[in-house]
Length: 75
Image (tube, rainbow, N blue to C red; front, side, top):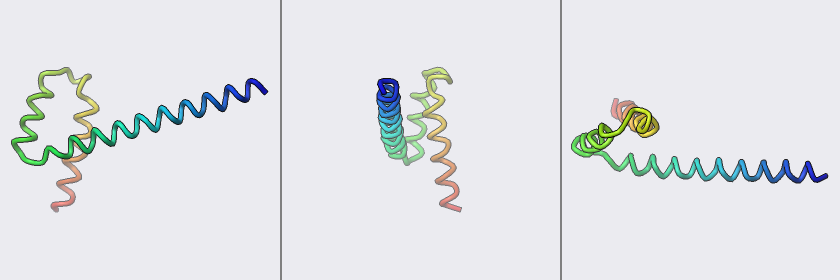
């Protein structure tokens, strides 16, 4: 019975962590989506250029996906 309780607690903890990470990513996506003009994006690119590819990979992934979404919507 104790093992079952630990398993349920572990599952709940894992789900809570995943939920929090998803909310943080969604918030980040909304913030990055606010960079709408060409000058905004150039400024963001300059900021990201100061960091390594490893440090900015998640941000660049989101930015690239959003850029593709804009292209698809405008086509």
